[in-house]
Picture 1 (tube, rainbow over the protein chains, first blue to last red):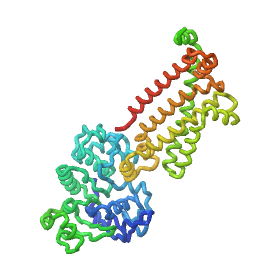
Picture 2 (picture 1 turned 45 degrees about the horizontal axis):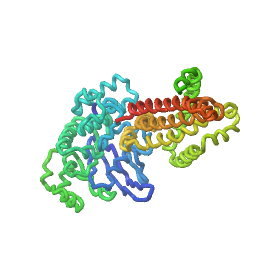
Picture 3 (picture 1 turned 120 degrees about the horizontal axis):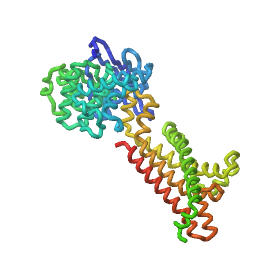
Picture 4 (picture 1 turned 60 degrees about the vertical axis):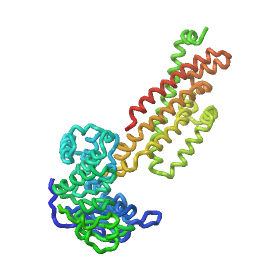
Length: 259
Length: 210
């Protein structure tokens, strides 16, 4: 399971705008590159366009202007099914299938990719271990798990076919503070090992500073700035400052090791 | 002579009429399932068809069954035999709950689950058969249950056009002004309805996710 962290661009937004068919523009003139192996955090308040940006990457929405390139190829030229199977997707509340056991949930992409059953089972065992869940949970249904366990299953499911890219839409947003901190820590150590290209959506500044190698602050459908956590906390950009002040998080958060 | 003595004396006829009744209900419900569920799925994919399809099914249901027999009588192959006529009539009347429940069931699937599935690269067909239909199954079976109970009752009218079934006793009893004969048709029909309701209710509970 190696994705050599070559230098290079995994995802690129080229002057991308997205307008809902009603007319309201959700995203305006976005230019942004996501480098291979980095964790780019899209930070912003509700309605700032972060989730739309995420969905443009796996073509759940298509740009009305400009193009989004994944591995140097515009998403509109990819077969959407192939594109999405190469990109892990984790959403808030996990979005697990309630009628599938944990095992079938995690093995979903390998199964529809027609891996042999034995190999799927083997992979599920591996993944349960990777995300710190007991093998005995495999036969349970999502409703029989705690919120934290469900979210771990969500992460395991996204990693199942070993995609080079991982999209995470507020994956820890619905968890209690302690569980969230635990999962954030595990995410960091997991990411250190796997070196995926991760695009992570959150409105939580602390989470962004903790997990991101770069933070892209969004406001009203526009990108304000894409900065490293250190640059971010020291930035003189008024919108960045405003965000920092709103969290009462000054330089204290700046001390952190970057993976 | 009470009802049960009457039924015991005519047991072979009671059994025969019950079987006829069952056959009409089973055949028409099966046909309605085969037509109604795909139609219900169809209107979730093309929202424009929603109103015309549900509207037509609604109108059909408001037409009194006896009148519907009259209309269908002129249809070539169908009108040739009373039994075919009865089955088609029952099928049409069972369509509405099936279409509506299939539609409601699929529309009720949690959008975040669907989005997760689509985001992971499931095709529309995989989403339909692995996610939407299984999750909607409880609601769809509830529709089958309503449709079956309705047609057990409606099938008694089939006797009016000579298609047999337990309605035979009811009409005969009405003509003879004999309550026992009416009850000999009504009691087994009611028992059938209760039985169908209970067994499909059990199935509904077993197949409902969560």
